Length: 322
Length: 263
Image 1 (spheres, each protein chain N blue to C red):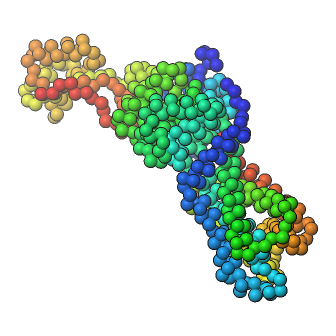
Image 2: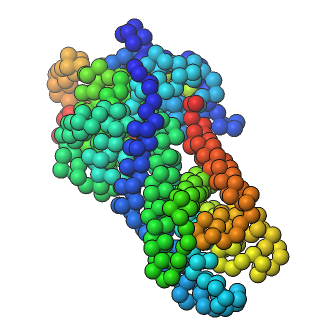
Image 3: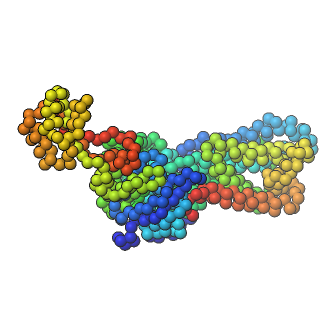
């Protein structure tokens, strides 16, 4: 595979179950060595897309090439190039962690010695050395997920599908999973991941496609997508009504919420513009009770392109409070 | 990238996996191993005299000899429950979804289940023969006869296991899988000439028992091990039944396994 060939190239992918359309003509193109995130709420069609691209189910229509191989005519060649970690644990609970990895090595035909070496290496890399001799059914959620990903990596696949890799993980496991994914891509692997967490896509992905009701409603880099959202602002809250009234005169461009005594000042969130605002507040000796910076994030994008809020709270960062 | 397949290696890997399961989760396989031995002892020692008397025993008719071939088939039949359940359970687990996205020999996953069950069933059959001899089974067979009998038993085990797995895969749950194989594990052994000769059955049941494969295979075993008379066509019929059940079971099971996936 030369580097000009995209790792995943999909045109016009359709899938319906009966008259329920799950994927309605999606096109996507993932460059080698990058992370592509399929972002969308539950039921948007993310898992179906991963199942099709990983040969688990067939598409109704569409041109699909994975690792340069036509998925329809040569699924075995696709299977040889990919690794999949699904949404639900794909470890064998009645085998130990080590046996699970050795089984994968055997299926990848690494040979006995190399298989054992690779298993030991992955146990080390995924912090499972101690757990390696225990049955996988006794593992915690985070450990199962790590073993799951380790099993996917045994055969050193060039393209990896991760279906909601951090759903249900605690924050620490989530960050270590992110770190592992970044390391993979640094090694030249291509990753297609699905997520319903906007911050996850923002954190990891080179390209994001927002999937809603089986269609891409937006696609681009995280920065491009953020431009689709309404601009950022700074929110100023006042305790005293007279201070609030004074502030409306000092900052005439602000949008007002007279009941809450809150002003929203358009601002791009840069240090320079923040400094300018602060010095105007200083010069007028305004008593601001609370100041928060709101930068547009993917939540705003999601809302802007689908017209629905996500379950996530807004990620306002409180920078100062009196 | 090479996409060569490794049928033997992949099947061996899956066999190892299934044998480990049998060791780690022995409930299913122990039941399958123990049940036929209990039936053997129950019918041989406790009911045997009564049955034997009712069937005109005493005139050189030894009920243990009559019973043992049928109990061997019963071991095979009751042994089909465990692979049907474990294959059905497997399909609901993420691990099989993983196998399906890997470049491995496609039939290996199910063949692993079948081979593991064949090994367990051979152990079960050996136990039954051991207990039978202990309570008075006196076969009158040459080494060649024993080999033929063993071959027939293994052939039936392979065939019924494939068929049971195909049945198991039609159900979504372990409970469903264990119920759906009941006709094989209970009906076929009891509605056959395992316990009583066909002549002593009510006519409707007798008609079923006469033509179903167990009766024919039991006849063949009694002929091989005890020298009892047999219709000469029954030997071929027994082999034909095994072959037919195996082929239907194999292709049906593979079709279920591959259902919906890219070819």
